[in-house]
Image: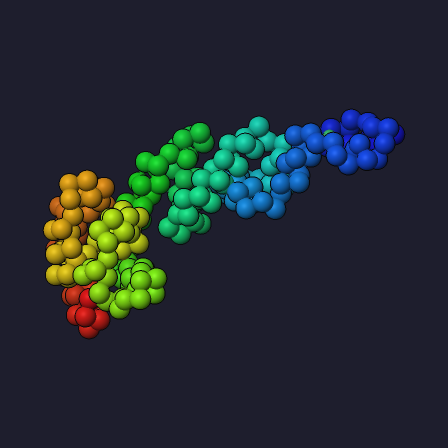
Length: 224
Ligand SMILES: [Zn+2]
C-alpha cells in the first residue's frame, strides 16, 4: 500500500497516490506560489504581534493546518493584485490595525493606509517617490519627466495622487501641480479628495515652513 503523507489515505498503486490530491497536499504543493508566500508572510507577522511571547516562528505546516489558511491566502492574492505602496509597510499596517481578518481585502482599508502614510512621511521620501513616478511616466511616454504636471493624462494623475505615488507635498507646493488640479473634473476631484485634504495640508505646511521651502526649492531647480 502507498500512503498519502498528508491525509493518511492508502492506495494500491504508487501512480494513484501520485495523482491523488487532498486539501493538505494541495496546500503543500502551493507553498511557493506568490500569493501563498505573501499569505504565509502575513500569517507569521500576525502571530508575532498577537502572541509576542511565543519564541518559535510559525512554520509552513502550522500555516497550512490553520483554519485561517484560506483567509490569509486570499489576502496574499489581494496584496499581489493591488501592488500596494510599500507592501511590507502595508502588511504591517493591516496586521496591527485591529481590523478583523475577513475585512483586510477591503479597498477602504488600503485607502486609509495610503492616507495615513502620506500624512506621516517626510517631505524627502514624498519628493523622492514623486520624482521616481514622474521619471517612470517620462520613460513610458518618451517625455521629459519634469513635464509630468503639464502633459500627464488627468486619469493617470488621479490614480498616481490617490495612491500617493505623487504626494500632496509636491502637487500643492508648485504652480504646475496646482494648475493641473484645476483641470480635474468633479469625479477626479472626488477620487483624490481624501488624500488631498486641503485644510490638513495647509495646516501642516504652516507648521513646517522649512520643509515647504525645501520642496519648493527642489521643484524650482528641477523645473517641475
Ligand atoms: Zn492526501
